[in-house]
Image 1 (cartoon, rainbow, N blue to C red):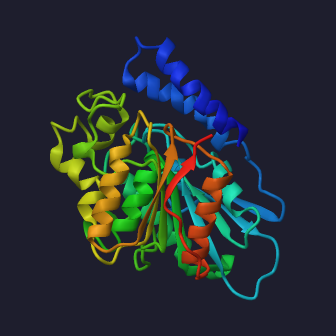
Image 2: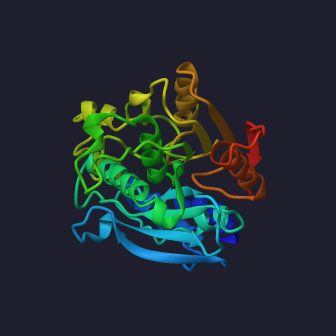
Length: 327
């Protein structure tokens, strides 16, 4: 977690000394800085084995593969699964950046998975959510052989990955977003709970004071995702926004967001929480005090672990809202 502190320290420096670069370039530089924090643990933690490059669609596309992290210890009952979805503005990133996932499961009797999905240089929306849903269906179809409980699947994503995790949480059964990928179409893509870390929730309200992302720039990751700017493609922007799909049967959410996030504004988190609560969906918002786009620390991991205990292990634990230190 030392790398996360480095990110917090260098983020304002990058934005200060490189003001001539456009938002896309600055976002990419920030992604390069955060990569070490997310990729710090490439191997399996003690007591786990890795099953790499599992093709969840069946076409051999490297962007449609996942890695499984399975406890080596024997179990008398299936284990819950935590699925990680990487960030990178929908145009960068890899399932190999699973260090934060491994930090969550290393001392727990959980299985883990980290998935790739097609980036914007290969496909536009809704390809990304189709991939994620195909991955969940494949994991559920092979749950028994991997000693995974198919009824206890959490999804956890950061930034663009947080957006996709949120979409999984609110679009169970939405036919147009299910896609027709892979051999397991009879399986459900629903998830048990969602950990959304600084993910966008509403692209129609994404712009505003405080974000370096220009939604009118056709070269940003967001524009590439939806096939044009928000003004040019408002219907697609709406379709790709988690707030547009909230219904009363959605999964419970843990929303994590820094109040000084200059990429995805903090207002995205508060808007999303309010919309979930209006639909009576359990939603807990954790605010990183003076937190930038990504931050870590022991208090945050404690609350994330409590959330997983409640929804994956059915423990009667209280979920604490409010602020945590971002450093």
